[in-house]
Image 1 (cartoon, rainbow, N blue to C red):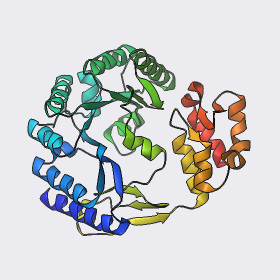
Image 2: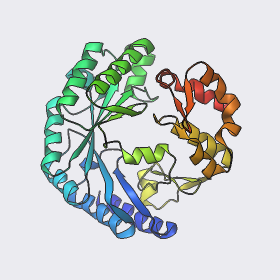
Image 3: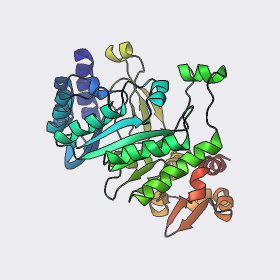
Image 4: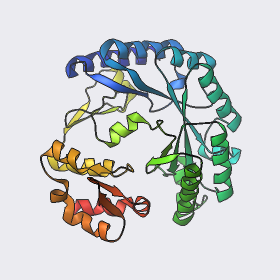
Length: 341
């Protein structure tokens, strides 16, 4: 861990020099389990960020934490060195579902972790929930929502399970040993999440994300708006001035100083990415912003391909924005496929 943290700090310094030490309004410690780090190594990386970048005084600073590994010492380090927002993967309230996912935490541990974060002065809490799990019922989903809301989060992400090839769950599904709930039940669970959270004062600002007023994840909104971001560490990605940088996925390669892969992004791809990412947001894509970025009117580039979705109610165009309707959010891929024609 000390060697890895030192390599991350070195990369931060190099990339800051390369990019001109830009200002930043968000910091996000994610991609794995940062709460496994010893507190002194988190502090070392946090200091490297502050030393090399102009981080805004009101920056949103998030750390992902596994509820089963967050300690009082790590929470205190987070609170003292910049973090003002914690994101935790609660996923489900039921022990059997957590066990099936291979999660090491319990609901009580998640509650305790949230309390530790608040005791450390971290005022914002985000929880991730999963739907469409093997054996999950509508009652399970309702119980999970109740348990999550009782922890007083300001932000909730509700994600449908994606069974990744190569995982133990993928093998069980392929062999027929595990059955998934199916698309219809997935959609019913998603609808339950949306209706429950709206009734509790949350608003849906992105397909899978809900927040109380002012508690939207600024970092993720920047990504969905296709703003530049810099990623540090093994397997981290960056988007910088229409280049995509991908760090090596192997720890050994990263520690050996292997250079990132750099992929230039042409204007056609950039415009599609702006639409693909922007349409995830409830606000959609602003036509004036599109024209400013690309020197072309959105409707000139995509109007013919988007018109069928306007006509059948999946998409709306009003007040200078193009955005998905509630029905469109359920079938977003059908809109995106048309943009590729």
